[in-house]
Image (cartoon, rainbow, N blue to C red; front, side, top):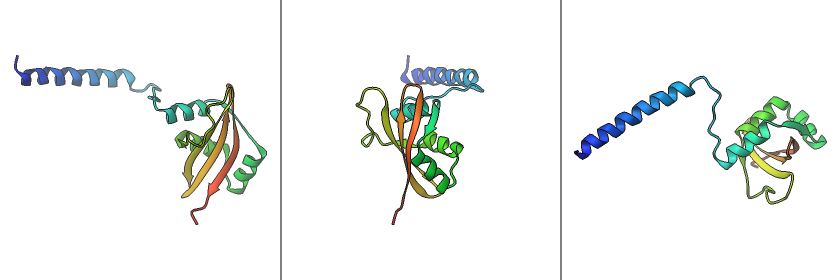
Length: 126
């Protein structure tokens, strides 16, 4: 069998597989959270959140509500070099994102059943 025929069969089968996969997965709440950032932010997002007094003060000063904070967590990037991931029990993560063209850093303590937002900090570029 010639190499061009092999490529044709391969591409034909691959195309059919993609169509079947798209048909089965369409409309379902499937996600591909394989990266460390995505797994961590998803894990924090699905838990019950509590807020420290410092975080609540920052939220009121910058007119943030819990919906905005949840979105910042879900779409943020985890800075693992600044996070405390080697401890037993509750790990503390630094999540970085932007809001209204300002950089935001959030420290979140991720325990087994709850996630506590320890601090929210807006970084000035000046």
